Image 1: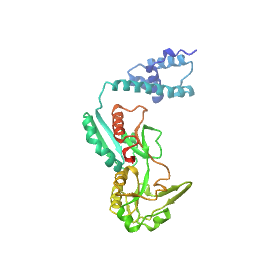
Image 2: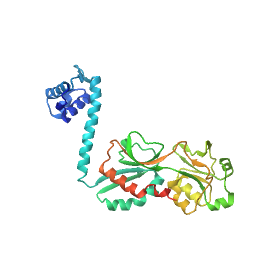
Image 3: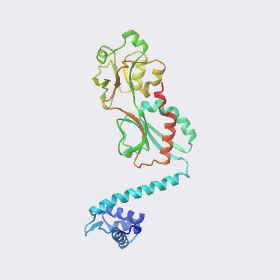
Image 4: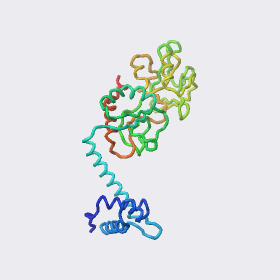
Length: 310
């Protein structure tokens, strides 16, 4: 029967280091230990588990199949231990330092920026670096702590909170509709002035679902822009018809400055449904700063978020 009482965090750490470096002597140098001490620790670990963990030769030290399996388990255990220590330590702390937060430009201007002053006032020791960009962000490569992502699904390497499913609206201003009339079907749009967004993935395509039927439309726009806010303003001023998400035009819909069109269809500018998430990379357990920001903005957004309120 295996004697697991001899296994501790130190022995797991040394074992993982030996696998990483492929050398007892290099790990010994890094840890200020003798090579024999490192070798003895690994040998004792193998005895406790009653299995060979490493192949040893003159050129390198390599994990056996069993060693690879145990290494994955040890990494998970050490990660959970570190997370527990961080959680306990953070309970005695206040948010502070730098939080790097990324969000899409239009969403950030409309739904993050209005709350920044209150956030800063509530957490004076926390310095926020807010980066607004519509480019794809790899949070690990870019050193981002928190990002608001609008996407079909969550990246498996990210964790966080679901905000809401995104809804899209086909809309135009009352002035435009008085002049050009109301389209009733996707085919009618070929006879209207369309305003379309062109981003990194090219020109928007529009999709209209009704029951089991789905129509895809490649708009022939009167105006094309890579700036969504400009297109929203142009639509408000009567320049044409736009297709944009609820969070971008909810205030204009509420004030009847834009009117929903073809409401018996479900419009979208993506072939797959998109949702909004507050996400952070790496560990399942967010840092205190990240949790603080997520909780703050989720409180402000509400459930359902205020831009989806009738």
